[in-house]
Image (cartoon, rainbow, N blue to C red; front, side, top):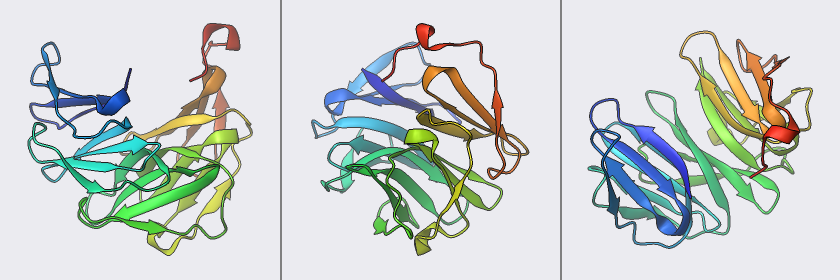
Length: 212
């Protein structure tokens, strides 16, 4: 199972998945298996500033590569799961996940050296997706959780109302005025700022999807 995929904006795709699986491609048609060096489940793939970054669930590994072929462990193993990665475009990388059921955030200024930040207050939910939205970080997760922070390194996050208890699995910003969060049972939420959210009708019901 492959769980995360990303494009570097130029020539290369990287997909990551179970048992430390990493594959890359130059055309999205022909894929080559790469050696990750670990057997943990891999979740999020990301690229910025010439650096590929991949996170793992279960053992908290962060892997890095400058060419999508030669990979090294940048951080881990640690006793948490990391599901997604974001970048603010200038100075801060952020990885989101959970330790048991508690939300966890790691930050880095260069994508190589990572620091775990203690959330204040602690949040008894897992975080599965993260995005940077016009000066504000947005994290989404289990139980309809939506958190925002202007300074994640401080550990200060604010819970926002999502009006759902469905697990939210990803969040994406279009770069200007639209944030979309998606989750179980066809849940789609939209926002202009990451703070106020509106439920949309996806046309997908629980009969059409398999939780996972």
